[in-house]
Length: 399
Length: 150
Image 1 (cartoon, each protein chain N blue to C red):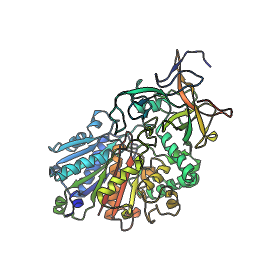
Image 2 (tube, rainbow over the protein chains, first blue to last red):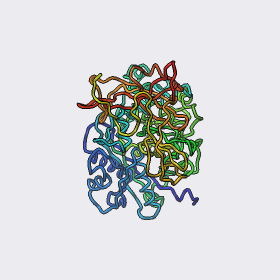
Image 3 (cartoon, rainbow over the protein chains, first blue to last red):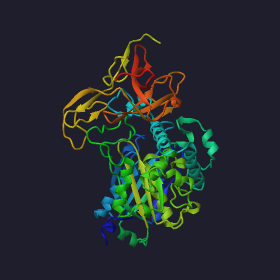
Image 4 (tube, rainbow over the protein chains, first blue to last red):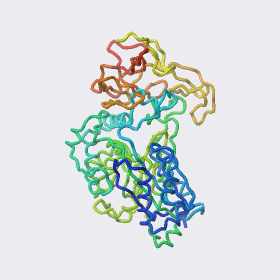
């Protein structure tokens, strides 16, 4: 066994609700996803030794201890429990906790689960006069999440020559493939004209360029390679890397929720901006490079951001993502399909579930079970996401 | 315009001289890194462990890194006028401090008036009013043809 193989765990089960805005208790979504994952794995609930949940911060105390809330709903059976909160990377942090437990020999099989019920509209900060909270400051001054996406998109147009048509083409691509995904919340296909006719939100981004917030639950059953062998699933997809690195000082890109960047006056600007650092660690840990990747699930909070991520994953050179898109390379059937699930464009963001939903999609793709969305011969996939306060993650799954 | 007294929307973040306002930041006395909002505890440069800072007025001019606008009313704590009026937002790069600071763009300017690289200066404008006071914030404004003194 090589050193990298020693660090791998198997994904023997994946489960996921359809994304929606039904407003049910988040625990219901978590339980549904967990039960599907358990059934998929052929693992009895009683055999799970560790439950690792992604927290939701919009559902009161049960959400802060989501791992326990979902374990209780499945029926207390004495498993150890963990809950991780890391904004959009919550699911990856929960997976990392399970991996550590398994690789340390402290449990054979773990349930990793995230679920959310989100309010309508903008995600708002806690109330009061709280200038010490950058999230409060930026909302008070009128800076919302789409503000940052708009700034990044405009920057792409100015620096790389991306066009509004390119951004619309991302939506058209993701809507087309997502329409074939039974778990997607939005299954309608759109044309470039539809995108152009939607309301402007944060120039140059329109309503159809920006993802919604959704309800949903996703779950994985992960285990040691020995346990997978005993289950008769020795060839199950494996987690080859989990990167949850923080940014490096001084960051030159203004990130949510900050009102200003770091000052590079003394330290100099970081050589690689934060989004680019996240997958670097994943590639290093997996011992592979961008050329080995067959498909990617990236955080298309906006259409333009999908293009940023493609470059951050080094699937092409800086500024070249729109060319890949125009050539059809990032579509299913192209050389490097991106968001074969339909992405956030078709799902909307269910924060603690979303990083796990990305891994569910890779799991099904690597097993050849993605139906009409199937990426032919997919062996290695990568995820990428980023949220507030220096939280981001990238996970590599291979078979 | 109301004649309510002008008070800062966020206390201590900018000078209140309406003619040539500055953002108030801090500068690490050991490594020279600037901070906005002001920092007085522990330097965020990982290579520096200093705890001494001097208060500084940041450059009041810079160039546009990128820009956008807000076409929808933000949630609280934003206080929106009735009816809501869209506004532009600019991310402005300060050369000496080597940092980018966000802010609304002054009233009367829209994204059509902006370009990456354009020179901008800091101004003060009313963010919102309550029953007794007009709450003032910083905004970015394109430098006028006659120029501006730093």
